[in-house]
Image 1 (cartoon, rainbow, N blue to C red):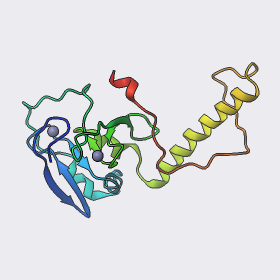
Image 2 (image 1 turned 90 degrees about the vertical axis):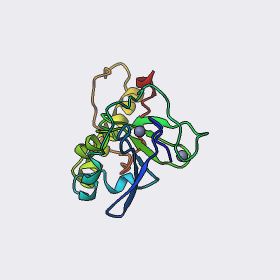
Image 3 (image 1 turned 30 degrees about the horizontal axis):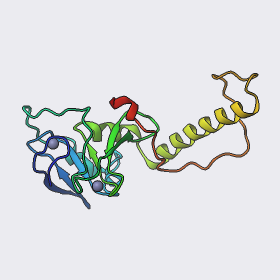
Image 4 (image 1 turned 90 degrees about the horizontal axis):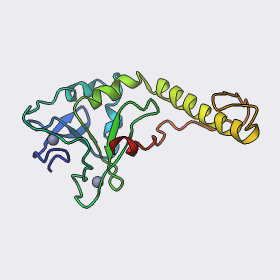
Length: 174
Ligand SMILES: [Zn+2]
Ligand SMILES: [Zn+2]
C-alpha cells in the first residue's frame, strides 16, 4: 500500500493491538484502518507512543493543499475535517472505508487534546450545549440576544456524542 501523501510504500507496524501503516522513510505519515486510531488517540493509551516519531526522509515534500486518495481504494477522494471539537488538528478520512491518514505531528496533536474519555465527553458536551443554546437563542429572541449572547436554556439538552462528527475543514484547504 502506498502513502496517500507522498506515494512511498508504507510499512505495517503493530503496536499493542493496533495495526498501522507507517510511511517510514517517506513523509512519516500514518494510516489507520477503521476504528484503529481510537485505540491510540489518548495519552493514557501508551501503545501510541511508538507511533509518534516515524523516521522521515527530509527530501520528501508533501503538498498539503492536494486532496488525497484513499490508499485502500484509489477511486475515493478523502475528506478533510477536524478531528475533534477543539478544531486544531485536521485529518484526512476516507468516506468509504473510514480509514484515517495523519501527517507527522498530527497524532501528537490529537493525543494532546484530551487526557481521557471523560475529558473528551465533557468537551463535546460543552461544545454542543453552546451550539444548541445559540440556535435556540437565535430562534426565540433574535433581537434581544445579540450574536455574542450565551443563553442557558436549562431544558432540552442534546445528548453529547462521544465521537461527534467534527466540522468540515474544507474551507481551510482551498
Ligand atoms: Zn508518505
Ligand atoms: Zn478508503
